[in-house]
Length: 305
Length: 305
Image 1: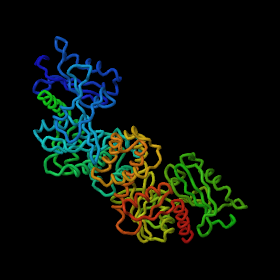
Image 2: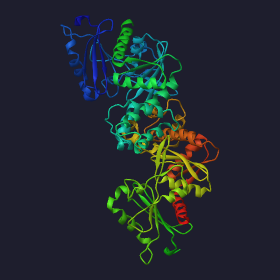
Image 3: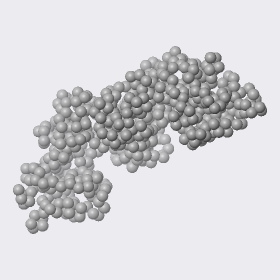
Image 4: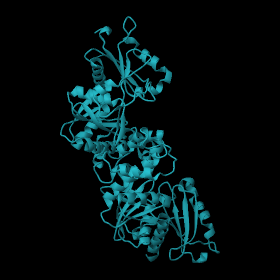
């Protein structure tokens, strides 16, 4: 293809990095770009330059460029322009209807996050695009979706509509326990992933006592030499991910249909092991591809409107 | 009484402070002392001087002093002399039988902690003395005992024998979440205790989703203004203490007998509110008095042997 065929530049602009994709009219990736200019690295007045230099190579000969649709923290209060959350329940069309145009640029849009404001409150920003992308990629209209990460999201979709979701602080909890808690004292937190220790952590997550107790078993087992310094971070990871999946699959997943597991390859592989161990069927969907397909799907809705 | 009647100097020597008590032959407190010379503030070779200067005012005219019995982190690897853990199940007599004598001093002893090394592993050091003291103070021989703190302990006693226990990292988790997690961003962590917010946290702890999700509700509710900056630490405290009590009362407390709640006044009052809210009967026992009675009871066992 030539640049003139390009239909859309899709950008996932997060806290610490960004990825850009040049898409054709069918939503297929023609070229991609990635750098570490996340929103924290861009001064408040610098977003316009940061965008245009990122996509400069995708300009047409006349200097114009394809439309840009962005998702992620670029639309947060700390980002370029705050795109107010769309309200759950929501379809892809609801996101399309509430995209925020960057007022100083032509054809440049930010997808809002989604919030829940009911008997529970919760928020997501970026994952909503991956959710609708994962549905496209699997041709499903109903699913329980798990998006692991610093703040893992669990979502429930029925009839192509996101009807509920919840956040678990799994990744952040892992980081701060390894770095700031007493567990740090006996642990080599940079050790390689240890599958056996991880599975023992998953098993622990089924026992009585709850997470506050399960986490102390990292230390107690360390004191007794049952879990060595090299195994403790994997064991802790198993305890945390096991608690997350047991609790949130329990809350959201009432069918035998596989959970859609949407994430980057490394983390998805670890979660996949956990789902298998816990006897919950899951189907992995590449997180990056889900973002692209989701942005393309939302763009189609915008074009249709 | 005169110093010459004194039977024992009981010392609770912890990580950041120490308390000494001059006891008569019936275990009653005649005088007490307190300072901030916890084990972290004493150089490895300085413990003998640190002890003798602490109790100098309780010397007899001939320069001798009553025997000293100590408990707490002074007997840990980071303390004066490591007193190896006694094994659970254990009676007060088992602690008496395994007290560690300080070899360079006459009549100076350290009570060991207790460990569990079974299908689960766990450790305590200091709380074991409070457990046996609480039994003395309440004339009970069977009880579920909750000792809230940085690392809360839950213990089960039958026939005056500690048969099982578990640790929950409740206090440490509260501190590190307030200080090092994203929850810090919207929170005034030094705000006064707010009873309503605390009870909302207790209520949250009953909901689906588990602790990793409940903790994120601190932030989500903060974003929506449901929980203000001044209320968030109390709400988080309710979430954590609610999870601790629900999980560990579930594991340990199978009777209608009141749980013995052993702790310092401020924390015990907060836990008392939580027990009331959760409909679990509890009886408060002063933690300091429990230490003194426990050390006196162990000393009687030593004297009897």
